[in-house]
Amino acid sequence: MEKHWSVVCALILALSAYLHFNAAFAAAADRNLTVTLPKPGHCPRRLNVVPSHKGCVCDEDCPADHKCCVFDCGAVCVPPAFTKPGVCPRRHWGSGMCAEFCSNDSDCPTKEKCCYNGCGHECTAPYTVKPGRCAPPQGTPMCAEYCYHDGQCPGEQKCCRTTCGHACSKPC
Image 1: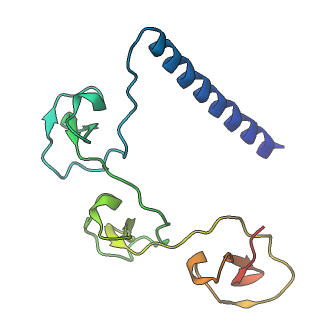
Image 2: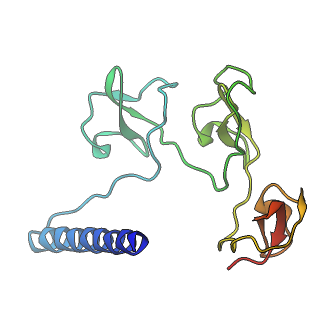
Image 3: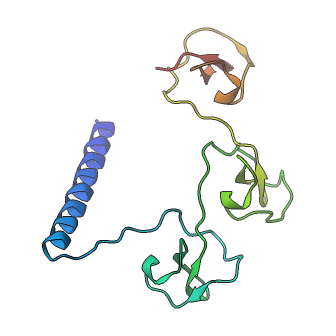
């Protein structure tokens, strides 16, 4: 039952946001005002570039595609960060180098993502996550790891938990 309430709440929030933005656009159109949307991308985790402008309040105050982001030094304009598709591999604490080689996906080449390595962050090839979900494991005792992520499975198949391991199977 709790699952249904969370879906209902999510739908109510989405409808509220939709109605709010439509009302804002209608009011602006009535008064011949322009409504500006936030610029694409998001603020990086760390300030690792020289800001293009200090003392902004919103993205409109920043030049070109830069965003107004708040760091320890206050609000500044910086180039946006973008999140690349895929999922970072799960790492355990203390298993990687304790250094920050990247702060967001935009710092990484090609399709690599900025992932936690167990101690710091480094550029890593992401796992592919295919649509759909895995069915609950059946009574088939397959005690082996035939896959670790969806990208290792053919076609539409996902890497799903078995009663004792993981194997590629058709999603629900």
